[in-house]
Length: 305
Image 1 (cartoon, one colour):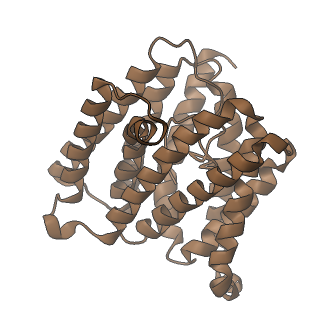
Image 2 (cartoon, rainbow, N blue to C red):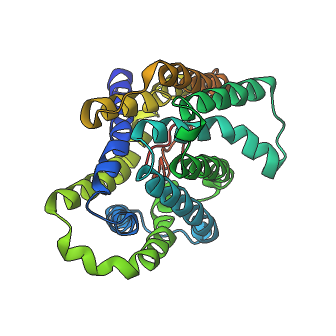
């Protein structure tokens, strides 16, 4: 893959991630959140099963799977309450929170850049969440703030363990606790499976096979030829693409306060990521978490649903 093609692939990946907020929100009209996640994780695990098992990844995949499940669950339920654009910007805060999580749980020092990025990010978040007044803050916003914190923990822990195990196996194995927890959650509503429309199953298939499994493979190859600071810059635009899709497909409007808050949040993400990766010749293989990450065979670039 050439650097030019690699950059194009990363832009396409970021567009796909941005679209998932709208896709999930629309799908929730016809399928329970628990069933959506159960089906998505199952399909993604099947698509990644070719990677096989790595015994060394058993414990890490369990912890990563639990963290990813909490992140996806709070985000998906939150998307049913708040707007897709709000969800995208708040989720993006996880990138800024990553150094904070590293300092809190792994005692890594915080740099002045980290304090500045976190401060600006939270100011942007406050402006977005309260753009229609304090009463506009809802349970969905708070749930997705939990998502952002959980993803930050996921990203840091993934960085701690990814170098010790087979990255592809880890991407697959973390889906096993995710799908087990999701099916446990979905059991009471499993009877609605025959009533879910075909277009919703098509959306679930896209989320699992394209936005999760397919992206995980493409991102590994693209980030081998694209400098890390360039990749971080591209990934930082995920909330922008999400807000654009929300406007075009759902009619969501940010308003001037939302635009200002969103600009501050995206700016804090770009500053945080580019500042951390500048000077390294290329990304350290991998991609989103199951969220695959987002959810990612093993980078902390972006964090869509």
